Length: 206
Image (cartoon, rainbow, N blue to C red; front, side, top):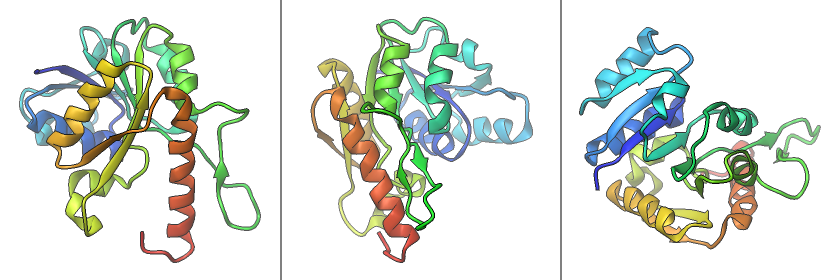
């Protein structure tokens, strides 16, 4: 189906996913704090397919899917700021890494026992949160062949229909979705990124 997708944030992740989703036939509206900046205009032009940019709260109006392409430390706050997203799918690709440890290894950055995705779900209890796209580099979202083999995208969420929609987006991009269960396992996916980042930071070419 052709969806209206609000991509909140125009950094690396938003700029990777927006054009990919547009190429699949979906309508992209970028939500930006500075929608008239030249880099946002350039992204809209590069996305094509009728893409537009507006404020974050305007972008989500009428959207079927909301992509939280924002820094992980503000994902919960941004989710709360967007108004009532009841019934919408929230795609959460965010991560939080605590880099304060003196040994040079990042630690998982979400306090307590939950996950960023669960914080987002609590902020929007009637939305359908799906964790996806958090375990890989944004460059491989665009060019999966650079990984040297099939690229798997683990997803978790509490709503089977929402996960099926996200899985369809993933397949459309030439990636392989793997459903790993309900949203309570989002912490595992978020910690996978921490391990990957540490490996990259200490010489492993993953």
